[in-house]
Image (cartoon, rainbow, N blue to C red; front, side, top):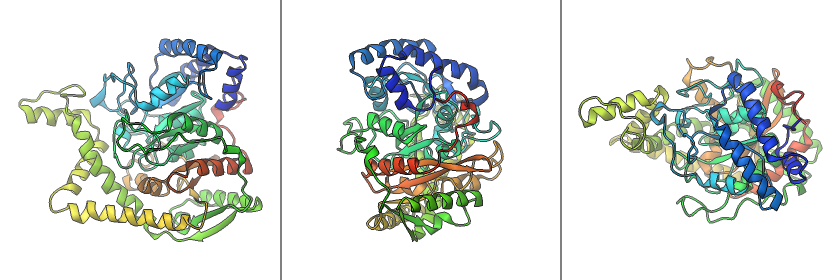
Length: 487
C-alpha cells in the first residue's frame, strides 16, 4: 500500500527505489477515481499525461537530478496556467480555455520532478470562501461531505485532506489557502508577497494574490514552498530574493519564543469551541517555554471592510480582459457593446458580477477618495500595527478561521457571514506577511486551525516556528477518508 500521510516520507521511499513514480501515480489516480465523485475536488485530470510524467520523472529519480519531492504528484488550483491542460478558474467564461504556457510555479514543479495530477475546483475566479460559487460543481469536506471545505481553494484543500493528492497548490488573496486548510485539517502556507511568482496565476487582486502550498505536514509544505519560490523576471512584483531555505526547519526551539495574541482575534467573532481549542494549545505551548503577550491591533477589525473595497477594485480592472474576444466563448447580441454585455452576463457568475460592480463603483469619480483611498489608508495602518508588534515578538498567533466547517448552503443567504470568515486571515494579505495555518485539534469533531504570522521575508522563521508548534501539540487526527490508509 502506498503511504498517504507524508509527501516527505513518500519522496524518501521513491529515492530509495522501494516504490516507483508510476506506482505512486497509479495509487493517486485510483484514489481520485474512487472518491472524487463524492468530494468534487478535480475539474480536470488527464490520466495518460500523469502516467507519462511519472515515467519521465523516474529517470530524474534514478539519476538523482530531481528536487526533494521528485516523484510526488501534486494537484493545482484551476487558476494556475497549465500548458495543454484546461484552465477555467471554475468559470463558464473560460470553459474550454487551454493555456499555451505554464505558470512559473508549474515550470518549477516539473523541473523538480513532480507530476501534475490535475486541476482543482475553486470559487469562481477565487471569489468566495466556500467553493460554492464554482460554475461547475460543489466540493465537499472530507471530514463531513455535507460540509464545505472552505474557499476559495477548497478543491486543493480537500484533495490533500481526502488523500487524493499528497500536496497541492492554491492561491491566497484574503485567506484562500489558510481558511480551507483550517476547515479541512491540513497545513496551508501563504508566503511573503512576492516570494513566489504570480506569472501564470490568473489575477484576482494583484496586490494581494499569492500562490502557496497545502500539505499534511509543515515539513511537506516547507519543501514545496522551497520548490516554487525564488525570483522570477517574468513577474514584475517578484522580490529579488532566493528560494525559501528550509535547511533549518527542524532546528528551532520553542523555549523563549514570543508570540503576540491580538485580543481582537480572540473576541466574540470567534466560536467558543475554536477559542477553547486555541487556549488549550496556548497552555501546552507555555509548558514548552513559549511566552505570550496579549496585544491590541484595533485596525484588524476593519480588515474585512477594507478588503472588500480593495480586492473588488483590483478585480474590476483585472477581469476586464474577459470579454469573449481574447478569452472565452463570445455570446453575440448585436453590436460590439451588446456582445460584451451578453458574454460577461452569461460567463460570469453572480458573485463575480457583484464584486466587479462594487469595485468599479469604488473607483469611480466622486467615490474614489471616499472608499478606495480610505481603504488603502486603513490597509497601511493595519500593516504598521502588525509591524510594530513584531518588533517585540517572533510572530503573531491567532485562530485561522473563526469557526469550523459549516454545512454546504448554510451561509449562502448571509453573504456577510461568509465574508467574516476571513477576519483572521486578511491582515497577512494586507501587509504581505507570511502566514501559516496548522491543525491544532478538533471542535464539534471538526478541525481547528492555528495561524502563525511573521514579518515580511520571515518565511523561514514562520515555517520553523510552525514545525516546532506542530511537534509540540497533540497530533490532529486525519480525516475519516484517510483512516486506515495513512501510513
